[in-house]
Length: 388
Image (cartoon, rainbow, N blue to C red):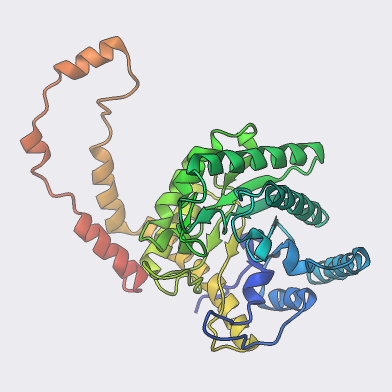
């Protein structure tokens, strides 16, 4: 019995997007299989399964062609639903990928009018999120890329993207919204190539911004694993840089289209290392599940999908604690740490560099001892498989 260990609590900060539990199961080969639910109904669903919060794109909540009075009524009803159900809105984002106007990109489009419209739409989405006290604003450049590089020089596209980000940071400051912008990378799809394909690419780009302190990243499991990269490594790099502002949890078979599968359902070992890292370093942000239920499911199945995402995270959290306290694992880690005690490099100084040049190293002796990584990995598997 888990005695409620795997039941979500508010302090777990589990969130879902309206577009996740509200996904109707359409794909490029088939239409929707689930009826449409209103944002209010989706908030009620999330409260039923024990989620902490709900996130939204601007047009998930307010249709793009809504009138001012329709917008006001929608926002009022949604606020009431969130309040009545104890659901927070920690993050908002903007849809700059669905409408035909963004077929050549949003912030990087060749048409200056499209770029201006994209910035305007983002500002209005920021206004909407601020009405719900959202603290993070995610930007996914789903159309910021190409099918053919004949259409524009890539460096010009990067300059355009920077110009728009700088403008939005200024708007953020002028409105006193206090948003942290979180940039979300993806290697491809829906464009053949997207300009910022990895979290590392965004981390480098952020350093060129006028208000880099406002901007971090939102790594997503599926987007890192599509090309076979390590999500945990991307997250660790972002954390070490002080730029892990948000995170998207799901799962993904490498080398496939973007699948957005239930968290931990495909790659349990990689998911375990990710959860362990987040818990070990004390990440205090939202745990956002950007995933979809199978097309086979009705809304009872969607609830099982949402419960499964949260339960799996908590199981891995429990496994991480077991791993950290495992006697043999701790013994092997202590041996590893023993080799790290006498740091031969340290901070540079002229005297220290001469000492390092004069030092003698026995490379044969250093290479002669097994490092016990096979045993360490086997013990990891046994913890995950429940035989520790």
